[in-house]
Length: 158
Ligand SMILES: [Cu+2]
Image 1 (tube, rainbow, N blue to C red):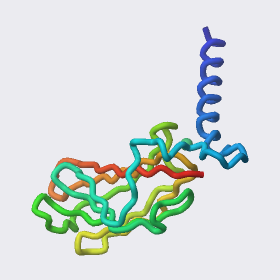
Image 2 (image 1 turned 90 degrees about the vertical axis):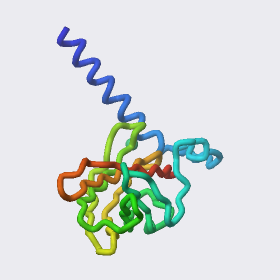
Image 3 (image 1 turned 120 degrees about the vertical axis):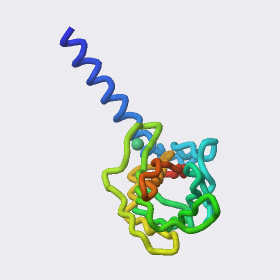
Image 4 (image 1 turned 45 degrees about the horizontal axis):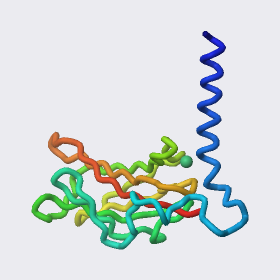
């Protein structure tokens, strides 16, 4: 019983390692990107001003630097609007990168700074590998409002 458990744990870490290394292996042929971003129907097409709903809020990706995002370290400027389209400055905004296909996040925690006028600067968005990344933007409204979340999804070719 104990041995079985150890074997299955070893196996699952093998699967994880394989899933996380295959996108770095583009086989050297150059014919097809190993990440398959072109065929991934989940991805957002980056454009400055892209918006996503977070409950009754709207999160606008004013811009990503660079744009579109790359494998490596990115920065983003977000704008948070309420249901009436007014800028929101008093929310706590948290940004979390997540790779849904590999079930892991980023080793680096993004830093969010309120700029005023509803804008938030996000630094250190570190996307370590090629593949589909979710950029989850959590919005904790002031005065005990319910936590809301918007998700941008970008697929990075190697
Ligand atoms: Cu991964």
